[in-house]
Amino acid sequence: MILLCISIILLIIACSLWGIENERIANNIKDILFGFSTNLLGIIVTVSFVQFFIDKQDEKQTHANEVALIKRYDRFMTVLIKRYLMFYHCVITPINKRKYENPMELKTNFDFEDMCDLYEQSLYICEGMYEPSIVLFYKAERMLCDYMIDMVENIDFKFNEELLKILTEFIESSIGYDIRGAILGNINERSGNEKLTKIIGELIKDSSNEWVKKGKQGELKGNIMLPYVQLYELLKIEIELLIRYKKYVDEL
Image (cartoon, helix red, strand yellow):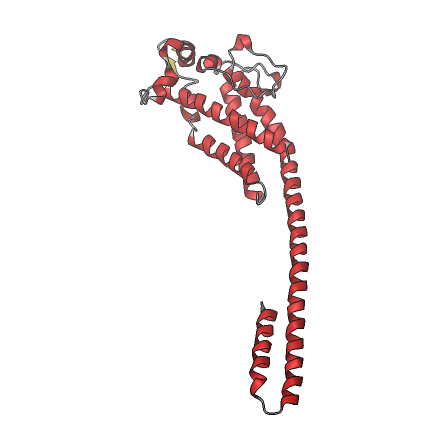
């Protein structure tokens, strides 16, 4: 821009010399000024093209660096997703139907009634065999969410805005649907001589109650089953986002 301004000024000065009485001196000065001006214009064009290609090369390198950083983060993310899915399957599957051969399966087709044994143990010996599945799930979910927050804070996502959107949606959903206090708080509660978790399990199993439908219609305000409906909705949202995440990263 500076060179362009100088070039224009020189052209203006050259054009203003038409009225000088000594035509020979005027022509010499005009030739010099026009020469300088055209040379400056040539420099501008050359510098612009060089800068354009340098910028393109820098952009290409920046893009490659961002992808490399995402893939480095994904190495540990894959481990955290695997842990998440281990306990996700325990929460969404009755204990007598649980299979442990493929914990990385991104299962989306489950019903609210399938969560009836979320308070039963996970049966993973290395993870506290007798701890309730929902407790272990929430621990894994928190670790995964915290790692996503760290990823969002440390990567610009200049070239991968869709991935940023996926991670942000997961974080927002995790926080927005966080009702773990109510769900975990029921573990040690009793209703008369019976554990509250057993009663809740039976209520979840009974499909005639249509808890999800009632929750969507706003009929469960103050009802003990509302947190479990919200948990069901959260699980549906998070698993879809993990599918989108995996598909996006695999295509990088």
